[in-house]
Amino acid sequence: MKIVLQRVRHASVSVNGERISEIGPGLLLLVGIANDDTQAEADWLAEKIAGLRILADTDGKMNRSVKDTGGEVLAVSQFTLLADTRKGKRPSFVNAAPPEEAEKLFDYFCERLGAAAITSVKTGSFGAMMDVSLVNDGPVTILLER
Image (cartoon, rainbow, N blue to C red):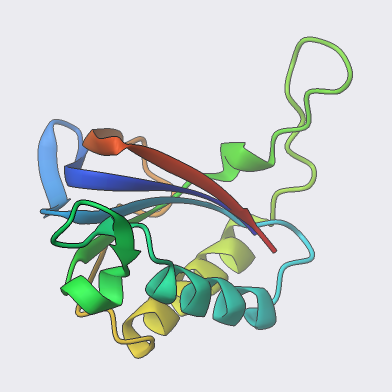
């Protein structure tokens, strides 16, 4: 799994011009699922994200987690994170999990985020063309892989 994590002031997802999900302060997660990913990777990443101390404390230092602050999470599936661009000019997505498998693992990952004491976990629409809007706080952007 590859996850691009962004600390945000707010973020939203729209499909066909209709806003389907939005969060206030918290984390936007762009989630790519590979062929060989399992629930073990999802479990590890959910725990890591819940406890990652990247939100500001009262002194403005990155010292609190989304779990500590009660912040929200917006998770958006994004198979293009698995693009292989080493050859040619057109990306290959052969390493991305098939949609049926990816959706099951994505849903499991989101459930695990909730089980890790994140109070609000929202998602985009799996497989849809989505417009993702965000205001990156910091900016803080971190790449997580497992």
